[in-house]
Length: 89
Image 1 (spheres, helix red, strand yellow):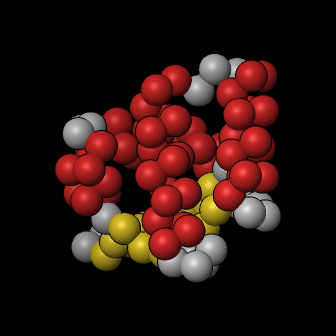
Image 2: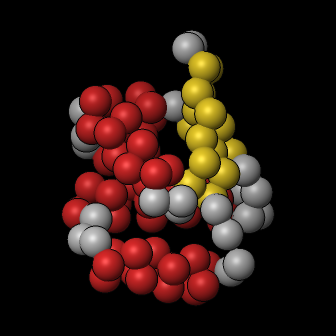
């Protein structure tokens, strides 16, 4: 899927169940990282996400779980290592 298709998919989810500003900002930051990595999987730490989005680490954890449960992303975390992310296409 290209950027336009991923964006459209996201907004369709948002129409069904309003995701909120935090989830929107989080997803589009991840989408930006995905595109910067040539549409490939990538790693980024919760600390870096927290800094870039000006959100608490707890909010980062809750939001990434929400996006995973909706089937928009997949992530794998391991203590002390940046989180591995995959955008579900």
